[in-house]
Amino acid sequence: EVQLVESGGGLVQPGRSLRLSCAASGFTFDDYAMHWVRQAPGKGLEWVSGISWNSGSIGYADSVKGRFTISRDNAKNSLYLQMNSLRAEDTALYYCAKDKDDYVWGRYFQHWGQGTLVTVSS
Amino acid sequence: DIQMTQSPSSLSASVGDRVTITCQASQDISNYLNWYQQKPGKAPKLLIYDASNLETGVPSRFSGSGSGTDFTFTISSLQPEDIATYYCQQYDNPSLTFGGGTKVEIK
Image (cartoon, rainbow over all chains, first blue to last red; front, side):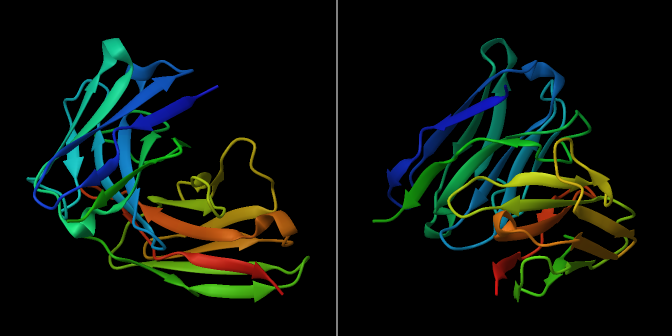
């Protein structure tokens, strides 16, 4: 059974940094692209970033480009999101998602974790 | 970025009704379109991929169609457990974008 468990969320002041982690199990991690998707409270879904199996292809939403960095450690079956220069509008539930395959930085969000909440506020 | 316009934003229908949701892309995206279901308090679930392919384990009352800029998602006979918000999502890289969502309620 595919399991994705996010961690690292919390309350952070504007301008500060936070690092999210996603621990994956139940599948061959380095066969798939992986993603971060977020959802602001009461709002819709927004893709944040995706990464190919070998980290060779990485994509970002314009809203986070230059501030967020996605990475993965295939030896540890883990996905990360380094978030710098956080803003109030980054407040959201952040989901880790597994793709159906490995095409560029991904196309599908086949399996999802339960999310970790990031709140940016002074 | 490609914009996805989903309509309606909400709908109310009776059990057994046929429900249709549309999604329009701001430019041609071929069949690069997926549909998700999100129940309250839960993570989204992939239902349809590549515009018309049913994900494994998803009931056959769900279907999708379309290509280019206009897409349709259909529930052939609405069930109480289908109460959720539905999202379309395009993957014509470089960016992946979602529609605004359609909240489906039981009348």
